[in-house]
Length: 225
Image (tube, rainbow, N blue to C red; front, side):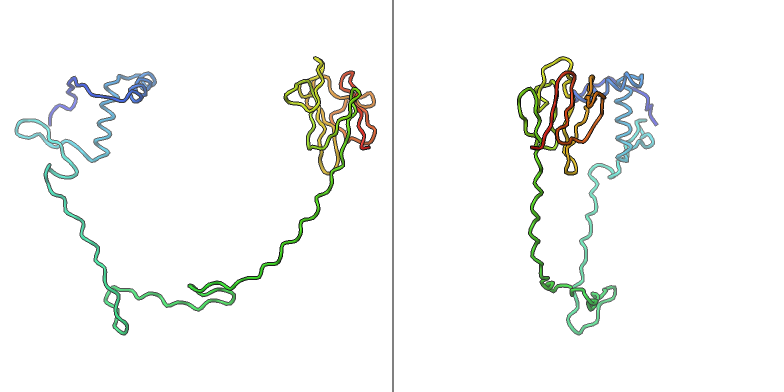
């Protein structure tokens, strides 16, 4: 067999992204570009069942194709033979399996091919009237704010809050009034200076009638009236 390690300089067209990909591979694997290309070609030929046979009279190896020598006609696939079904009263041909007899439906089942009986549908129950949420009002800086949403955010950031307090001591998202389980709660949103109630810093508390909280020096008073 000829020398399979012999190399000859050749040129070919290559897609740009493949060449860039192989350049990265050469750096990562520490090998040359021609080594990668030769390996890729060798593996592709092997995956297609192409190989080299013994040398011919001129000493050159012969390529063995899985489809035979060039020009060899390939046998056409034989058409599938289908047996016609037997006529009524005739015995089935050898190897022909008769169709299974339909089984009677079990109690409660519908026979195959028959339309299922219409099942009466009970009228849908009228939806219950949604519970009216009791609104909560916040009194701040002479203004009265209506809170009737699940989360009312208080803080310094004007684009992310429902009540904006422009003070450097107030965090961007300082606190929130949250509606849960039919009640309102005030919750600290990991602020720097926190929330004070009755002189103590709190993390969260249910909002009751007349509760007054402090964010730094700012008073927040709540009422349901």
